[in-house]
Image 1 (cartoon, rainbow, N blue to C red):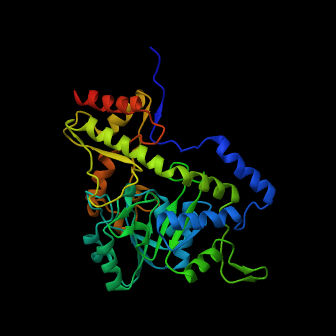
Image 2: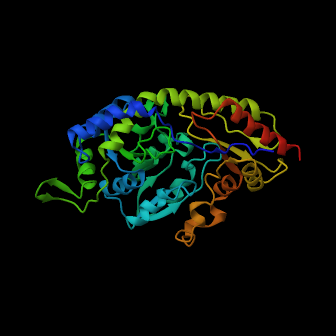
Image 3: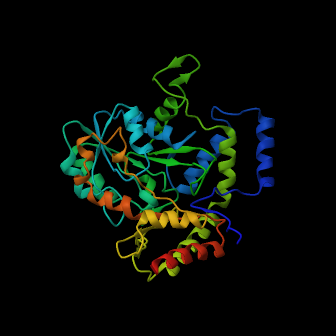
Length: 373
């Protein structure tokens, strides 16, 4: 029997190649490849307009954007964050000689639980770094209230949250800074890339200096910056992607709805509700594999692989399980029961615009088949 074609958890959105050729020709004609060229400037403005934000600084990737965001706000000491994320969130702290302090998550949003934050604050705490996990917004009001009470900075890891809005507009406008990823697997991508969203021109100037070695002009360096600039090639691809992103998100929503319908009623499978009042981007489709399901989450993950369905255990292991973090007092599993449970039960099913309706049904059928025991 012929093996089914593989289905991956995500695939990059790629517009037709012929649409990209005029951008390449323009780059060749301009002979400007980097250093804030015309496509870089156009993309910054286009993203400000699309996302409804005041200022945006483009980066070569989201991790360098996180590193720079911490530098831009001169964050030191301890930063309260989540253990339930991709390791770049906390790695950026270690690279800045910052001590991450982990607190547990809310089991419904998968985000940092504001009720856990206050008890973790010490005299060394200078900031909070929450994550909009799966593009599901954090409780930004509660987090900001705590930050204001204790004079803390707030930097959001918004790698998953491109285009996400609530009743007040873009979720990216909350906190002091928000950091986006434009990695190839994201809803909006520039091959590789990232960005920092900020609220004032002075902060953007500092960020732009830090991502370009600290240069102010040809002979003046004001900070120990790095090289994190986005190239013209990446910026041009981003401009093209922006033309197609609404269509891509609409297709993701269709897949989300098909999964919700097809998985409804399967014993032991829980699909988290979409958050009320939120304009989502459907960046991921997490499900929880509970004790009533005949297989463990890990067993289901392996069974799906046997059918050439490559789901992902986002996020497993927890950040606090890795050797550079597990020795921290805040990394104890007894302090993080909800995050630990999510890491053991969540599996993200494939979702991307090119995923066919037949393949969606194939994933649903596999989950239902193993539910029979």
